[in-house]
Image 1 (cartoon, protein in one colour):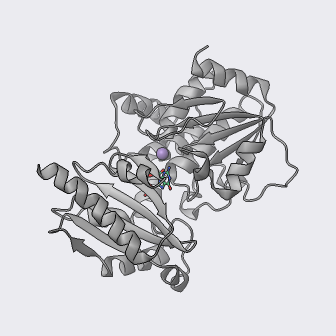
Image 2: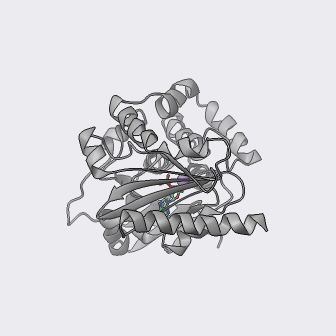
Length: 322
Ligand code: 5GP
Ligand code: MN
């Protein structure tokens, strides 16, 4: 049986479905969860999306208000579907126990580092986004994509490709053409995702930029934010997103490092421009992601984390010089 047929079987056999995604959910995580929720409901399924904290910037997506931020301990589901998460730990301490408890599991993702941790795993790492994979799965389930689904799915495709720059395949635009047929307002979606910001976000960005350092002859950009900063500006989860790109945009920079204090350690975002494979570094320290956009967590002091990351990147910069 093909993977898509296996997913169809799992979905057909289930009445109640729980959708989970990764911690600090981004546009692709929230978009694929809500888009798939709408799709599965067309099949008369009871579907919950569980995301304890989702940034309000995604509140324009239909169904955002229905996201469950808590689940009763005795809630029961026939099937658990993990979206846009490369491994069990990425589901967070809130999601992982549910994935482990629910009897049937499906994983849909596009991360090259995916660990295939479900009963059925649809991992197409060539796809722009998990949302793009959701389109294929919905087609296999014979669900026609409506406007609500399209808004969510288009959002994930748009954000995960950085505005259709990275990870784009010819099919990406074929799928987009199909989404446009539903009448979505792409100017409005773009503004919600890329232009509209809040004062708090802008202040945090300003703090990070004021600390920006260029290392290794300007090939590495480095900056960070602390818990204290986020407290000072009353930031919300996800307000740090996108800060890492400012370093990457500087002429001559190959890798941008962004650190965010978290649980006594640091959450790291890495972005590269041309030749450094940041997924290799992330994978070495139990993180993951893509060639040019990866993340990891380091439980160590600030100086240790910074030294470790810079030395890993220096190693690859040297390899390239050879
Ligand atoms: P970001 O830097 O925006 O948080 O993440 C960049 C990419 O790396 C995303 O594709 C994200 O899913 C992945 N990623 C970020 N942090 C982690 C992590 O701790 N573990 C894994 N497996 N992937 C991560
Ligand atoms: Mn994604």
